[in-house]
Length: 362
Image (cartoon, rainbow, N blue to C red; front, side, top):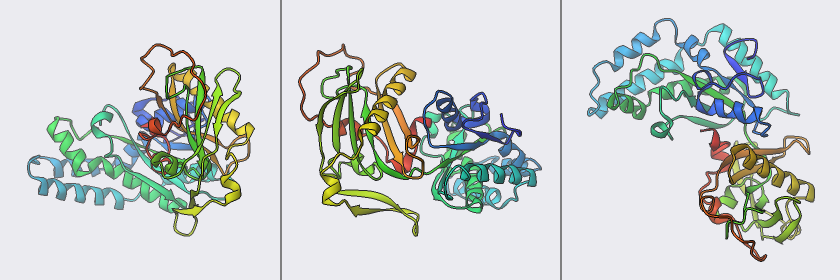
């Protein structure tokens, strides 16, 4: 671990325990240790949350929750609002502020200029089972500056007491006293080029192939089918290109610094007509997909991006990796002929790159 028990960088070498890092944090630390190039960042651990909550606030929270009727939604909403306001307005202990500021400064020093960050809740599995709590944990995107990051850390802590979370615990007899929350602080991905890769041919399950869809900008337009991406199929062993189809790629989503949001811009005819991945980048994406498959032990759908804020050769990031489920349980297919086979159908289930950053860490 780092020199304190409040902060753990993804590459800090700590054991990725759910108890200390929460589900997302533990997954990101695990993937970093496995050599997966996830967007860099650190975890504000559950020890930090516990230090923040020390000093009587927990007793006050418990008193507000005591005796709540899960059928009285108005009372639950009122308790939730009061508790969340209590947490977001409570001063952070000086020691915790200091180490969080140091971690923020260290992370930002990795880049040529200060970059926006994501602040993401990372609940402990023991307190809030992932399957039931999915979608209830707060995530804040495109956050600029140390002060805004710290405000959103407290907002993530407060998300333990949303009405939905309170109701879930009431209905499942989960005690409120020993709850805890870690928070992930992670670089927002500034995608110059992005897309998906599947470690097989998605049309027939041929596992000797890797199929890549790629387009300019943030990958949401690929996932939603708004643009027709480049589609390239490679031999999984040699990484030689077997077939390729240059998509229209008529538009791209790029970050707008003034509004901290994404804007759609038109892609020039010259850029549309050429493949958006260089030969070198194509091999890097294919190799990353193979590494993910080897790491997880089964064919993978991955979501990836080339980050414009990072140097060439170090700018390929893994945003999501999940098992391919359509063909994986079937026998290996006999290789079929070439032809354009877009993987968009399988990619449609992916969340937006900007919204998820790393859904596999959920």
